[in-house]
Length: 209
Image (cartoon, rainbow, N blue to C red; front, side, top):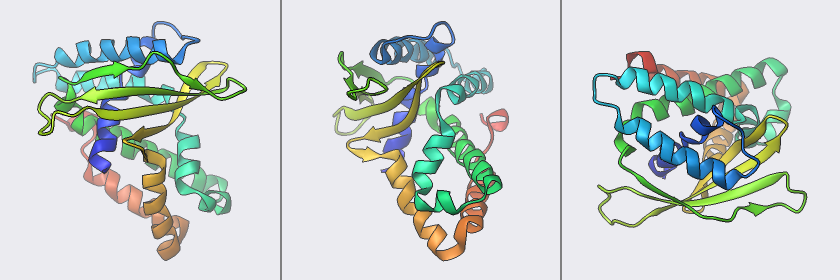
């Protein structure tokens, strides 16, 4: 399941590329337009410029996620018990885990086909939106598209993603189950230690190749 969630991240990365040109008041247009742009960018990866492409992608993705909000949701009740310093470290490590793992795997999905559905589902106050899409991986054994939903909320700077759901499985929920188990065993500091260890085991973009 975690692999499929990172497929969603791979499909999502273009989200932030278009936002570098202009913010959109329509989350569907934003996801659709930028998905096409990112696929064009990834197809330019010739094996010699991989580090450059990955570094550019990561730099553009990070501002379009609300990693603090994602981390708070993933940690759950333990987030309220964490000190401000622990919360900051958790957010930093979770961001590194997602972006660096993504950077080490995204090249596998550059031939993906993304079908963004035309209508977003908005909350009554219009502050949150769910954009649905299907991702088809040409080399997939079953040839069935993967259902990917992006959950966003509106900020003065534009839409920001705080969760991704793949085939009904929420990225935040998957991590929450793992994080809560670690917190029960070893507390907040134990979770921070686990995240640091995971990040140390994933090559950074500068060394990926």
